[in-house]
Structures are given as structure tokens and as C-alpha cells.
Length: 116
Image 1: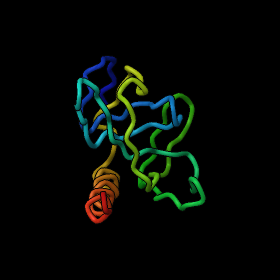
Image 2 (image 1 turned 45 degrees about the vertical axis):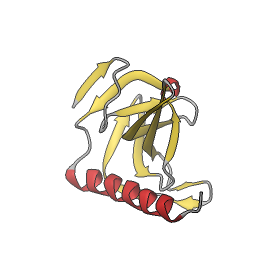
Image 3 (image 1 turned 60 degrees about the horizontal axis):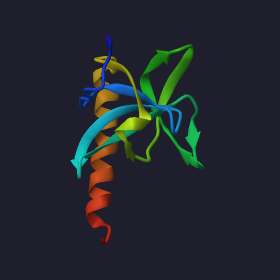
Image 4 (image 1 turned 90 degrees about the vertical axis):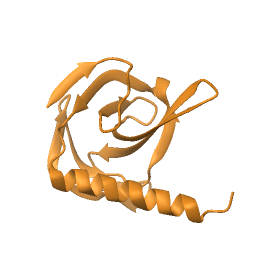
């Protein structure tokens, strides 16, 4: 597990988002009009979020005394300024990485089918 601190966001890192108070597995970095937004699959300590079941992780993510055990199915995009400088890399096992990727793929498919 690699732990570091910087503002150079990278896909695959896990960073804390202080707006929604969850750790996010970064899936996309979007730069438009000199603003950086980050899309993440978020990790939760509980089995549900916003009246929806979360997806249980095979492993656990223990950070700052809290144990993340679930992926939240709703993928969100936030301004990069809402993420802390502290990042974690290479902490998800293959199964959990696959689950996170699948959640993001479903998000992209749903986004394509929505009218603009």
C-alpha cells in the first residue's frame, strides 16, 4: 500500500472527500475551463446509502480507525478541491478492484442512455 500527500490526482487513488465524508476510488479526472473535477466510486462503512443497498467488498479498507466494507453504487463527481491531499494506492484486491470498475462501467452506460 502506497500512502502519499500531494495535489497530483491520479486514477486509481483513494482519497477522502470532505464534502460527502467518504473515501473515493478515483475513476476519472475531468478538466474543463481550468477547473478540475473528479469522478469516484465511494466507499462506505454501512450496508446502505440513501435508501439503496451498497455492494459488499471482499476485503476491508481500514483508514483512520474506520473500516470501509462497502462500495456505494451511486457514482459522483466533485470539484477536486473537495478531496484531501492524502492519497492511498494499491490497496484494493483484484475482486474489489473489479467490483469498483463494474460500478463505474454501469454508471457510464446509464449516463449514455440519459437524454441531455
